[in-house]
Amino acid sequence: MPFTLGLTGFPLSHSLSPKLHNAALAAAGLEGSYSLFPVDPAHPDELAALLGRVRSGEIHGLNVTIPHKQSVLPLLDELSETATAIGAVNTIYLRNGRLIGDNTDAAGFWEDVSSKLETRYSIFENRKSALVLGAGGSARAVVFALQAHGWNVSVAARRIEQAQALVTEFGLQAAYDIDPPISNFDLLVNTTPLGMTPDTATCAWEGDFPPKAFVYDLIYNPPETLLIKRARAAGLQASNGLGMLIEQAALAFELWTGHKADRHAMRESIQPQES
Image (tube, rainbow, N blue to C red; front, side):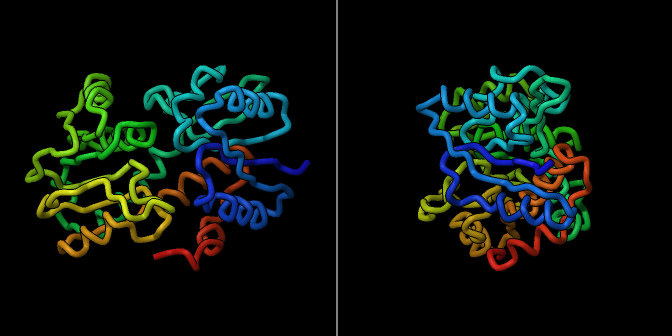
């Protein structure tokens, strides 16, 4: 039986997920396809209808991205332990007639960012203070991953109430608006869509950078966002979120199909667009 897989969110024109998953399907010798299912948040009935197609078995696996990672929660029957702890979903599938929400973002983020930090910092274990920009579904996954590995985390968001809610829920260090103090952060993570294609002239961080921070931008299209350019111009190490994208996709693929994802084949499928 061919696998019918896909991604919902809005907008989706920037997404590399079809290339990644179609490459994984081919490498595993599986029939199927991965498609984009854009749903405007102004039409929540369309999101419910799309999840109904997963429930009916028409779609075998669905990824969820901005802005639906939290809005899908009331439409699901059950959450994994990880998705429950994070409070956001990026992967949906059907098990025993029940619609399950899971989250592979946290593990995908940590797999990528930890390898980069270990490569660049010999004192990695002592670098434990992070500032996360944004307070939505992706931010929740990043906060969860960092806390699970012993990091002290603060958040900054344009909607300060949302940031404060994260502080309360996760027991974080502090919540800031878009102008927090900068001196004591070892890691700066952007989880907002600012800087993403087509709005490449926007930037999630306008001020000076923490002087010794590693800057990680979850955005991967364009490969070098304005945030990354500014960080590198300031003499800092910086990375886009392509590694996280591949890892979270591979973990979702394995949940849906029961087959190991060929991460090398997935990376090769998008090689021309890498930085």
